[in-house]
Length: 286
Image (cartoon, rainbow, N blue to C red; front, side):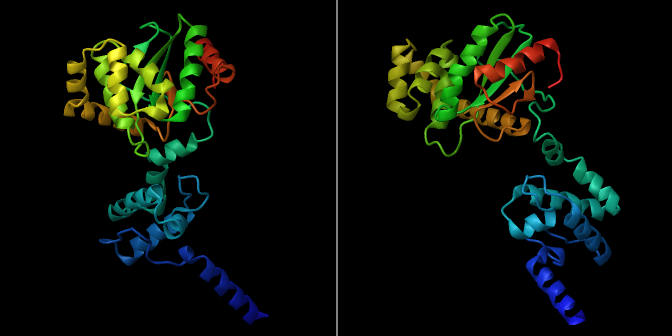
């Protein structure tokens, strides 16, 4: 019986190498003595990864080494140990991380508010609206195209209380999304962001440079100025800056909408989203 239990334990350990591994993929333990390294490994073996995989950090490192969050958490734990923090102190560092903060909000409809710069960005609705919606979007995203109608319905339902601000978040998977983003900012410089916005979303599957130029002519843009602005490296930098703002705020895909700075995780269909707006106007917890 004893031999059987020993063999069974050995089989379980072999099936879960992260429980006994003294090295983890992508984790540099340099500068730690054996005691500190052991402390870090113990913490990583019993701390949940924040990516939502339902594994511990150590397990995620071993079984999913491409996970950026488990790598980042491990990279926080090692220097904390170098500084002489105890296991409890290292756990506190991980618990206080931005990754953990976002994980705690994962199942909430609205996250805690964050600051998103909106000065100079395209917007519509009253400047002093009680609710400001900030939308991070991609002109080639089919879900973003659907969201256009939903958000217009909300603006029409709350004409005095809701303002919509548009932010660029072109995805790498869409070949002309950054071009479209730059084009929209070039149109914005001539006061015609929304007409080009509407043209591109109505034809999101057909976006390319030639069609963008044709739409620019149709809405009456100064074409020479438009092309110069669209191709200006400063415009590309502005698009990348907004992408960075999105990552910092917690955007992971498009469309993502923030309600008075609070990331919204739910349906944008007017029947559902209207209740969120009404609760926000009434100051009710959500």
